[in-house]
Amino acid sequence: MIWKRGLLYLLMPVVVFGLATYLTIDILLRAGDTVVCPDIRGKTVEEAREMARSAGLSLVVMRYENRNDVPYNHITVQKPEANISTRKGRIVHVIVSEGPQLTEVPTLTGRSLQEAEGMLNEKKLKPGRVIEIPHTAAGKVIAQIPKGGERSLEGREITILIGAGINKYYLMPDVRKIEFAELQDEMDAKGIKYRIEYTQGYRPSQPNISGMSVPPRSLFKVDKEILIYITNGGQEWPQSE
Image 1 (cartoon, rainbow, N blue to C red):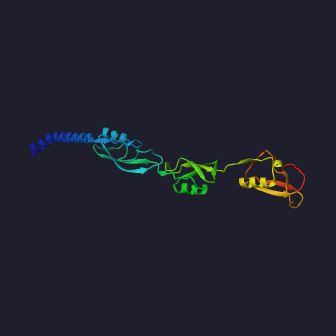
Image 2 (cartoon, rainbow, N blue to C red):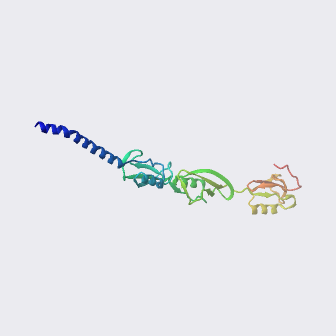
């Protein structure tokens, strides 16, 4: 028994050394199979794939999502997370940004401002600056920036150009040289508003133009109401208003 005990004492260091050597080699081998996962957040898919490959990993896109704060085709989330040890050859799953949500700009031409604002709200766009432009389509949208049909970010302001009507002007003829009936015909034909005032308090049988609210040979707006003073006698021209 004594010799067996002595043999055991002699073999014990050898066994311990062998076991320690095995464990050390196993740990070293296992350490060789692990890598540090790189931080690929904010990188493009192509950049992230190359970084993963260089670290001995592969990359798979799980899904795309709309993100207003991350550009298109850039990584937003990764699993496993960055800067942790992971098994070599492991797949890194990522979520990729599709960029901000885009919407189609509606065509506003020919619509009233109220209608245009409603159409923009439906598309999650905002009415921006409203610019009035002289145009025959008064009160209607005549142009927009950006144009209808274009793709735009949600929440973007759309500039609206709306018709404000055209100020037309006429030249007042020298009414002292034309008949009252001729003047009436000309004003009716041009759509000029006018009002007659009889200086004698009644309508004369042979009306004569004694004055007007707009001086002869002067310009006036088409929407201005003209006062025509009529008398049955001499040419007395009151001072123009």
